Structure formats: structure tokens, C-alpha cells
Amino acid sequence: MTNLDAKRLRTLLDGFPRTKVAILGDIMLDRYVWGDVNRISQEAPVPIVEVRRESARFGAAANVAENVAALGARATLVGVVGDDEAGRELLSLLTGRGVDVDCVVTEVDRPTTTKLRVIAHSQQVVRADSEVTTDVTGEVEARVLDGLRRVLADSDVLIVSDYGKGVVTQTTIGAAISTARDLGKMVCVDPKESHFASYVGVTAITPNQKEAGAAVGATITDENSLLDVGWQLQKQLEAGCVVITRGEHGMSLFMSGGELVHLPTVGREVFDVTGAGDTVVSALAVALAAGASMEEAAIIANHAAGLVIREIGTASVGLDAIEHSFADAGEGGRVG
Image (spheres, rainbow, N blue to C red):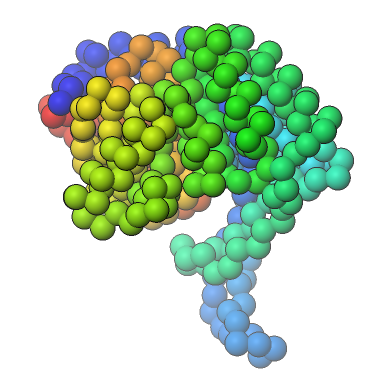
């Protein structure tokens, strides 16, 4: 087990602002309506939410890009939004966070994927989705691929954020991985089960426990099934590392050299795991680009995820918060 002491951690974090990260994926806007419930409607047996405030946050690849930018790295996003209010709002918010959106394609006939969540007393009451999930094709797909190739040439690492909303297709995945390989760039993937077979040869892939099991037609229920699924997936994909995120059980790394590492969770309070996978793949990729070993990068990503699950909805963390998390863990951030 790697010992990541305070000095080594500081060296790696100091390297984050020098990294350049390309993000390919499905872009979403998360809207939230916050309120209280004190009565039931007379029209139907449903709660009446008295609205107190509304907010908008980043979802899917947009959340990955914002997480990368929050870590101090240069984030360039490649994807698709609709020619609508949600798309314009999302691009404006991303630009305000320092994300480069020049390679985000606007499609007239496709709405921006939007998820509306109504929250009352810290509990989600209902969610409403507005989206089209068919694969992008024709001119839109060509523009996505062109943007991807241009961005990759000036990036250290590529993140593929696959939410199954039509931007990450067999064609775009294949082009992304082959281009990255030709350019000698690392590829980190937050996957969707239906595309697992396309991720052969990536640097790292970060499925959660359910996704990993589904990818090999199994269910992870205990230590033995975890090992079976992890190693089977690693061999099938020939991946540098399969990082299986396991909620309150932390994460497990199945590395190409046959090394297995279990990292316990550092989350002390869990309010919402929404977007935790985005944070894991973001921190992992940035840390790798900054010179971390796979295990060091996973340790940093584990701490980052432990911070965001304390928040309701998607969130991001900065370098100071990560350093404080290590300090709170004791032993100067030593893990192992």
C-alpha cells in the first residue's frame, strides 16, 4: 500500500494547475427547487411543496468539467447542448467557472438534457427529466469528433463521461480512444454498462459496484464476487486499472500488473451520492496528469468523493478541501 504523506500530497496538488484535461461526454443541467412540505393537496394525495428557492447545478460531463476546473486544472469540454434557454444557461455557468466550452456543439433539434429535482426537508420529492437520448449523427457527430481531435492534441488526459444520452457513441468512443492512443494521452472513463465493450485499453475505468457487476453478467454481493467481477473486467478490457467504487465500502483497484488495492471510504457523513462518480473520475484523471501513480491518484479521488457526498446534489471540491481531508484523516494524510 502506498504511503501518501503530506509532502508528497503537496507536490502532487501543486502540479494540478499545470494539467490540461479534455472531457468528452453527455452534458446536463440539474435544476433544483427547494422548499418545505406542511400539507397534502386536496386535488390528489401528493405533498404541496412551498417553494423557498431555486438553483441550477452542473450534471454529467458538465459536472466533470466543473470538478476538473475546481481542482485548478484546465478543463475543455466536448459535447452537445440544445439551442434553448437551458443550454445557454449551462454554457454561461460553465464559462463562469473557467471551463472552455468552445468545442461544445449546439444542436437545434435536440433539447439540453435537464433534470428537475424538487427537494423538501432535505428529501427528494420528485424528479422530472427533459431529454432526447438517441445517438448524435451526421454533421453534429462530425463536429463533436473534430472538436475532440483538436482538444486532445493539447491535453494531458481525456475523460469520457458516459451517461447514455447520445453523445458517447460507438463512433465517438472509438475515435476518442484511438486518437488518444496515437497521441500518447491517458484515458479515464466513467462508464455506461451498454458501452463497456468499447473501452478496451483505457488507462482507468471507474464503474460503481452495480455497473461493474452488470458488465460481466454478475452481482457483487461479497468479497469473492467482488474479486471475480473486478479481475474479469480488468482482463476483458485490458485496462490499466479498474476502479470499482463501492459506496460506504470505499473503492477497490484492480491493476494490470495483478495488484489489488482496497481503499476504505473517508466519507464521514453521507447526504447524497449524486455526482460522486463524476468527482472520482475527475480527481483521478487530474492526479494522474500531475504525475501521481494510479494508487496515489485513487487515494486523492477517494478523499474528494468523501467530501462531495456530504452535499445534496452535485458538488465539487478544491485543493484546500482535499488537503484538509487528508489532515483530518490523521498521520499527515498517510494511507496504508
